[in-house]
Length: 254
Ligand code: IPE
Ligand code: IPE
Ligand code: MG
Image 1 (tube, rainbow, N blue to C red):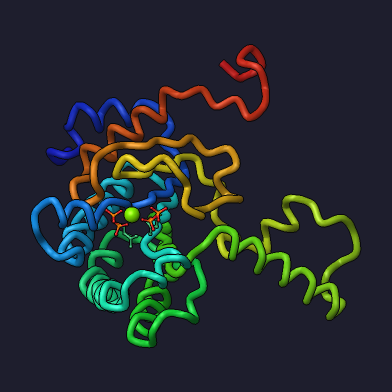
Image 2 (cartoon, rainbow, N blue to C red):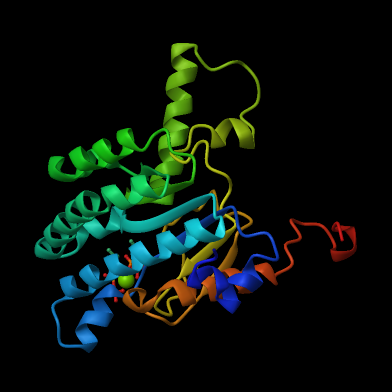
């Protein structure tokens, strides 16, 4: 029997067209959500983890293959030390509390970013969930942690140089596919849809390479208030965009 969620008119509409294979979300606005309520910023991050759970479930249910969540940028290390420490604690809590949910939903957890910069108490549960979920085929949930798109591209270039020096890089041109294989996201499909919450209309170093042909949706909603409904509305908007990839409209398959 269909669940209530599956009978939801918005969800039924979405099921009629292809859903984006890979969705990336810049989860922004936690601090402002808390400040508006006179709460410490960390309470906004805490409430934001409820949005993470709800959006992940919804994405999985409608058939998204890959969901990448920008949780902490390479630049976010420069925030006040107590906020950084609080965010690291929340990450650990999230990894411990969501482990079961991730496994029950057939989700494979991945992470991209300068992961060696994360404290051990985050890296250990991250690696544990990654390992235990490695065989799952339902949806890849990638956490972008200490992530920067420029850093990723620089690391890919560095890795190509190293391989050339070591003689393990086959001779030939460095084309787009060769380069993409060196990125932290190797194996993930290109990003089809980037959603950014909180009204900011910038990419802030997120998936610079992978979003070359992504559709962008910017919403005013602050991340702690971005739930299933808002996610489904964004997917529906995406489904009504015409993606041309450089072609003319007339050239596209009907
Ligand atoms: C996004 O919310 C979460 C992180 C960057 C870690 P913010 O903390 O940036 O919230 P605002 O933008 O200050 O409201
Ligand atoms: C982007 O948000 C990073 C994450 C959502 C993790 P920021 O709040 O750090 O971005 P800026 O500083 O407003 O560009
Ligand atoms: Mg922000």
